[in-house]
Image (cartoon, rainbow, N blue to C red; front, top):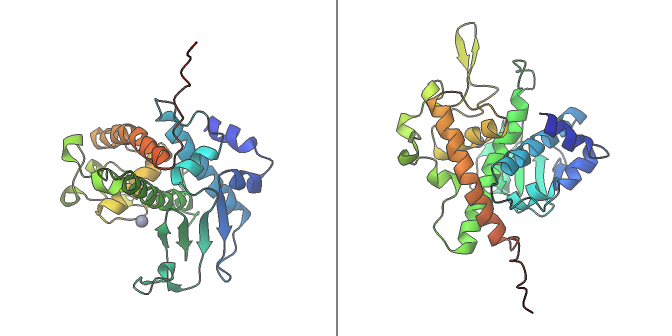
Length: 264
Ligand SMILES: [Zn+2]
């Protein structure tokens, strides 16, 4: 948390911070305007995501990249990951996509579309649902970025959706996932005996994609459950993140060149 504050306060303002992280907040002409609070939450989540990757980077691949540059490199967006609010229309303007009447859709590693946001009033003193909504969609965008990296490298696709059901890692496969079961590893909120998935879980689907997006947002925010399942997810993320970083940076030509040979 202290690191988040230090990074954010290093910028002249929220706009400068978003600019450094290469995040554009748009309205697709007619979508809901972005408020200052929403802008701050997007930046704060981007900072947390970048910090989580820096912690899980034993080889120091990100060390030479400044605040925001690392985020940009991870998402391979090079300055144009856009979060758009949209009117009610087909997601991503794809003819085959459903009409989005609520929630969000991640179109690619460069574009997330929000029809509505999870409520920032869903708050338990630690977290609000809207910040997890931002991190959740960044999780989908990350998968797109990493899958593209493996395609570019023409190697086996070990992107998040492909490997999150690896039983050898102690992770549950879809048939063993249930959002309100602590063995799923993600927190739920207990309100007078009733379990609610928000703010920590944005989607109760057991698919690899939705399970990953919620795992990712809780990893970045340090809220994976402190039980066997949560620790399995934490160690899986910490083991996979360096591999994903290496694949993404290599595919982008951003792995540091080897030091020049010093010959007399
Ligand atoms: Zn989702």
